[in-house]
Structure formats: structure tokens, C-alpha cells
Length: 287
Image 1 (cartoon, one colour):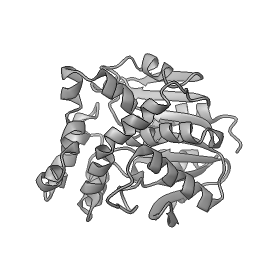
Image 2 (tube, one colour):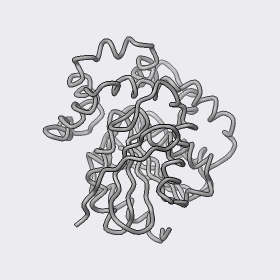
Image 3 (cartoon, helix red, strand yellow):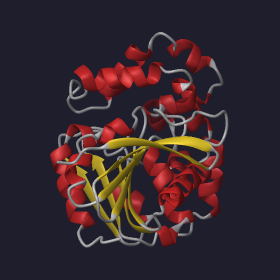
């Protein structure tokens, strides 16, 4: 029986909260928006039977510090590198969803020697969204633009965290009720904490820096084996972009899999399918 434990470490100048569970070769799980590391509750008990799972709250999210600056993905990848150094971990298998996939992609490019294999879930890389944006994409990615506005989102969301999160979890899921009850309440509590909404907004407000960083090494492909997963039914990713083509631009050694009857949150909506794909992809990873 795997018993996840929460820990804190001071790394890259911030206090980072992370879950540590299981033993074996290290596998890092990076959550997306609007989540925290609670998002991996279905993966940790299963993967933790075979691997050591490290699941941090990203900078600005959950119980990790929420400083005013430092949200460009190069620095957030540095957050992870510093955390791994604190834990004495050199090389990892890396899994990222949504915003966490952006951090994971940058980590794989900046620290290729530290990534044995990479999983990116329901994510279109930042520079490709910026390159391809048109009226249709902008309508689906309205929150990208809204979150860029200084102060206004925080002002409008304050006291309305439940309604704000309910929209995302309902609209982004194939089954609108898939994240409800105590799971939903857990996220509401997290985003009612001081600075939590601002931290998430700061992640998006690093967009211009993120695009600039991505353009610098756009011609450098991810070298390690890469698995791209996405929900087949999500309008803003699988239905809007040719995901195998998108990720073929990013990685040479690529496997691309659409998950049917699934929206933006495959790890929470279809955990059994995701766990099976992760276990298959991680086979042979021994640290």
C-alpha cells in the first residue's frame, strides 16, 4: 500500500511543496491549470508500486510559494532542477499536463541529460499556439488572453473561486460531473488561499517570455522518447489541432495517443486508461 507524504524543500529561492511516494526509479509528475498536485491522486498509488513518484506543486500553485516573479518556463524548469538536486536525484522520467507540460518541455530542452523519457498530456506547445492563433483559436483560448490582464482577473474572481473553477472543470471535461464533490472542493480551497489566483495568473503572464524562449531553440527537437496524450473530445486541443503533427515538430522519438471519451483532464477523467499508457511507456526505466 503506497502512502503518499507531503514534504517541503527550499530550492531555487522558493519553498516548494511536493508529494513523495514509492521507491525505485524516479518519475516526476507536473500538474496543470486549474489544478495542484492533487491532480495525480489516481496515478500516485498505481505508479508508486513500481517507481518513486515526485509530484510538486508548481511555483504559484498549491502549497508552493507564490512570488511576484519567476514564472517563465525556463525558471520554472530551474525550480524542478533545484528540487531534484535537493533530493539527490539526477535523471528522471518526466510527466507533465497542461501548464506542467510546458514546464516539462522546457526542462527536457534545457536539461536533456536529466530526462530519460517524457510524457506531455493535452498540451499544445506555447510557440505553436502563438504562431497559429486566429479568431477560432482565440475564442477557445480566451482565458490565455484574459489571464494576461494585470489585476482584473484577481479582482473579478475574488469570492467567486467556486464559480470560476466550476466553469473550467465542467467545460473542459467530457463528463461535466467527473470532478465534483470532495475533489472539486479540494481545488476550491486551494484557490481561495492567499495569492493562489495571482500565482496562476502569473504563470500565464509569462507568455511573452515563454514564446521568446521557445523561439530561441525551436529547431532543437526533444531527443528522448516522448509520449503525447490528449483527450479526443476536447475542443481546444484534440479537435482543434493535428496533435501528432504538432508534437512531431517537437520530438523525433514520438508516440501520439488520443484518449476517447475524454476532455482536457485525462489523468482525472480516464485514470485507468492513462495509468495503463504510462505503465507501458515507463517499462524499462530503471533510474
